[in-house]
Image (cartoon, rainbow, N blue to C red; front, side):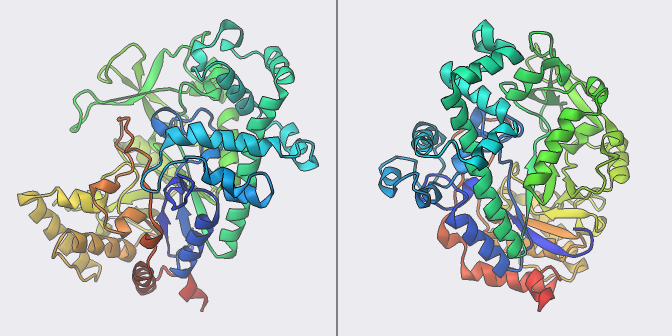
Length: 505
């Protein structure tokens, strides 16, 4: 990441083609790794692999270190004799167009339970996995959730509402089978993931994961650790929640609702909870993108009783002291949004590459930090992120003077970097921006697949601060991974020195 020009593709695992209603860690994931290798790409960037929570968002998980059992490939379980193909084909897991999380919940979990019923629970490797305790909290939490009608923990009966070690051990003893089932989901996921990741390494592809800054309120983390980690009272009720202040886009700001961290209290034990979280991620991924990185410098908290974010305040995070023993980690900092001198100082001191977004670049402002001519090598250049409108959709919505400014600015940037711009239509403009990203001085360029395909607003993966069946449900088809796209990627990555295969030849 430090010494070579490379590129990658952003593609959430959930978006992969499959006939299991959701992308999985099976054959299509391996096929995508092959495709990356053939295109000369070095990086596969994914979104968080945590179980999805409220609104099906991987950024609102029930557990910060658990893994999404919906991504387990059922056909791989067939190969082990744990399921039959007939059992899979007779279950309605959803179609190929969109992920139907309701059907995953209703029908995939029973299939996993059936596989578990045929699994050797006394196998030495599995017993060692369980005894390691890594997923003990998650397995207990999910066992209780299933027993208590999937209510959030703060609506559980008093016996279980506040975590207690003795109660936890007793419950596990009395519900051993259920507890082991949830351990099984993590065991199988990790086995499939590690095999896929090893294959990617053989093909010269590294995986960039994603770490949300905050956790959901209805989570193992808040339930178990309470005021040891979060700003909550003795009953684990939050006094303040996370948000974003009012800006040009929102008079009320954004009220995210996540519990915020008590950084001062965590400092007393050397931020043990956070260190464990990051170390767990570094075992899963080769590179880690940390979302909302500015929160380590300062974060915005809002009284929990408020209905909007206007009454919030900025508070200090742990700053660079937290990263003093992590400066050699392969971390990418998502440094977008409201930035100030403190964030700039933090970024300089930790030395991690930040992010630049082409979609934000062409506004007529010569000092716009997202313009390729304004940044240095230590950045990752994107056309857009999972929270933005797809690039072509953004271009389609421009009109009049804003479109003319966009074209003039893009043409000027292309000229400065020796890129031939085509401004014929929105698809051509989108392609020109992609080529410009490859030509940029940034050491790493990552392009979301929807932008490589010049897809419009229909391909938007997330509308922030909304709950909708359109969020997190995007799927791609096998034909999207075409020879034509492969040839384009090979050509442009070779031309701008980012093709890993050509460097080895």
